[in-house]
Length: 82
Image 1 (cartoon, rainbow, N blue to C red):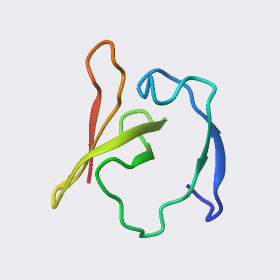
Image 2 (image 1 turned 180 degrees about the vertical axis):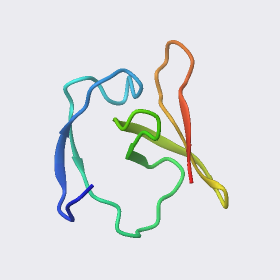
Image 3 (image 1 turned 45 degrees about the vertical axis):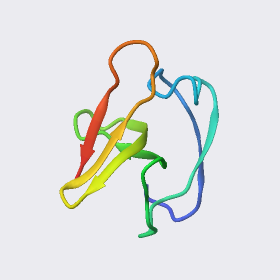
């Protein structure tokens, strides 16, 4: 994100159902070096298509951060950042 101020975002997509539903409003705080941990919900830019992705952190290690969507039906999408 290009700003240091929190921004409002309207959630779209099914990957975080049932925790988040399409149309939910999220306040996104830009990352500025604060510690992240397993269980945190994060927003990042997809390396594949440049879209915003909302996932939960499922693991952290020296090679990167692994995130996963929560969608109950269908395969769970995972992404490794780093």
